[in-house]
Image (cartoon, rainbow, N blue to C red; front, side, top):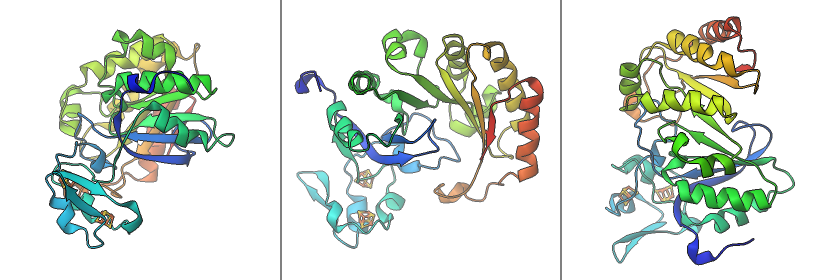
Length: 287
Ligand code: SF4
Ligand code: SF4
């Protein structure tokens, strides 16, 4: 590895999954960074959204004393943890005390243990573009090790303004959470102007690996979203076979107040997939 350790940015890493076959093509290591500006009703990793402020509430909930406070900071002892998730459930900030401060070299050391069994790295979150400098540092190290990096993003970062990141990463897997901006605001708390700008920018520049829409029927118009997203992708398919992944909302991991949202039927998902196919998007997947 190269680069001065002192120049590398340390970021909050929620966790690293050694192998995943659902976060991009092939087997990949997935790095989940902490922090996200969206507040999606169906968020499946709600504990990755906020930053810990060391309030100590979770420390009192931990029955195995895996958590303690020292000098005003939460200390986590993994050996004592039984993974009951009481800490995450009790956190008022959408955070977790079980995070680590890591720089790009620290992350690469963990990822390199999986070589040759992985095809690349996916950086997810939270929202990975919360840390653009870290992403560039990780991409440089990863490229030295012949491991392509994909970014899993909610689309809130203006990719058009970061040519260096675009050159270094292999592509972006972009969420289109709703086509209509008011609905997007209802689902996430934020409008989608920058998200739709990114959809076109990434497709034009051959950096759009995959688009994803989570279907939660009662909170936005999934039919309109799939149709309009498919139409927007169509002109760029001769450059790259962009995949459209249509994902069913499921209540697992979701915050309790949103667990009762309606899950889509298989028929509904198949119908949405057919609409995308009819428009000309052939590389579709429903999960
Ligand atoms: S993880 Fe949450 S509950 Fe625990 S100290 Fe941090 S902010 Fe407080
Ligand atoms: S998941 Fe681990 S750290 Fe969190 S409350 Fe349970 S035992 Fe304690």
